[in-house]
Each structure stands twice: as C-alpha cells, then as structure tokens.
Length: 66
Image 1: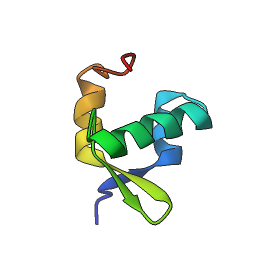
Image 2: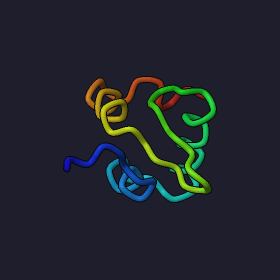
Image 3: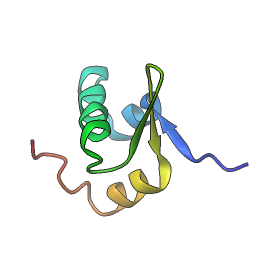
C-alpha cells in the first residue's frame, strides 16, 4: 500500500527545518487547513501527502507569510 501521509519528521527532513519551526508550521496548518492538510491524531500530526506535495511542487506558496 502506498504511503498517504507524511510524519512531522519526514516534513522536517524535506524542508530542512528545525523541530520547532516544523511543529509551528504543522500546527498552523492543522488549525487553518492552509497551506496543506494536517490531521491531528492523538498527539501526533499527520500531513496528507497529496496536499503537501501539491503545495511543495507549487513553490511552497505562503511559506514565508504569517
């Protein structure tokens, strides 16, 4: 079965971010649904792969905006 979500660690590695910045980005995305879909399952954050890949391939639009 194909992987359908990324872990926070995988996102951190792909974006070359530190732990704090990664979790800030993922928490913001979980709360707003932007710039990609993040699901909270218990205390874990899971990033929907298709939405993250679309955002990443589009040049990470909105990444530097707060």
